[in-house]
Image (cartoon, rainbow, N blue to C red):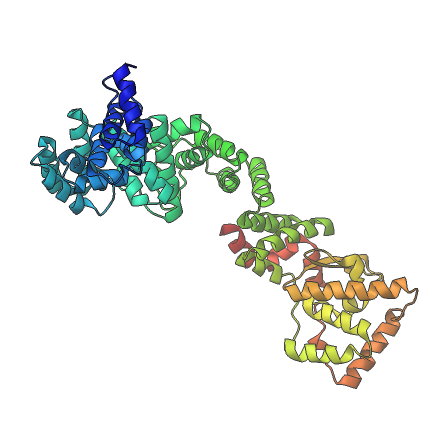
Length: 515
């Protein structure tokens, strides 16, 4: 650096305003012995001693291109320079305003003010007044790029990233569309913005509004190749003919490719897109589909259920229960249905209801009666609560062992040692239809556990329990139908075998599998 340049910089540091402005200008432009270093130049021009000077703001606005001003966060300096009368600043600030939706009138006003000093501004104003909403920004950016004044793609890209950070889909869509009009194929940065736009549109149930499908697909392909799971998932669905929210597959991919789409969905699922497992199940379970594979379909359904998809849990539980031939299989099926019901799945709740026998009377009257009985015979009261919650027959209610039969999702009754016929004595699994049922089941387990630990048998055998129950009902004027369900042996048997249950609950089962 020359001696006079060193002296100039020393003057600027000592507080000379003129020297500070000149040093800032030279750093911004990289002229007259100073290297180009925009950040250092801005530091000089935004120093407290110079930041309020219109000359400093104008230097910042006029010496740097718009995209660099935006990257350095100098939007306010640009605005103040435009208000100070700089035609070039007005042209740049008007263009920045045009990258926002709904600010076209303000942008046109700045172009009109700049037209006297900037020939390009007059052309921009004419475009602003005549072009359509979708064509206005790309045409003006093309004008500035061709005039060697600005980098139109860089301006639109910055505005698109700003819109993405703010969650502003209309502005993001506007800026991405402008970029597409300025380049023939996507870059890595632009393709990432396209993926963000697709994801935002899916999340908000909006469309891409005329975005070229070939550009969108090329962007998704590029980001998929770079390991972006959102791109992989979106492209996999589009190629498989699956909509992404309100985005139809034809807006993301030019033509379907089921095999490639399935492969991409599998990759997306493996990367953590858990919804993809359910899509894979539906594709592989459809016998009309070229990739149909029942064994793989079941595997994908299990994967989706394990990852918390309520629909998958319901369908897996329904299929397992329909095929169940043992108490173990029934328990597994009910567990899946219970998990789906806890997530609010109405079809799963209907299937669980079909496994519980009804009892008569009001819940309030039953509660009052059991609470009164609780003082004299807590063991019988506990059994009556379970009988009403789980729809138990009289024999089941008096014979059930709550501790042995308790499950996280409900109760397993049996095998019943007091019935000679093996088929009728077989156990059956009953789901809890409410939190109160599980609470009372836990209380019963605690009560009977304490009795066993104390080494006594307060209830006695089944004959004594039955006698105590009959006397208690006579004493409190209670009817058995309020607590005990009644069912023929054929009905009870249908709860133990999946195919028989499926026939009885065929309507609810069909709805659960079709939904």
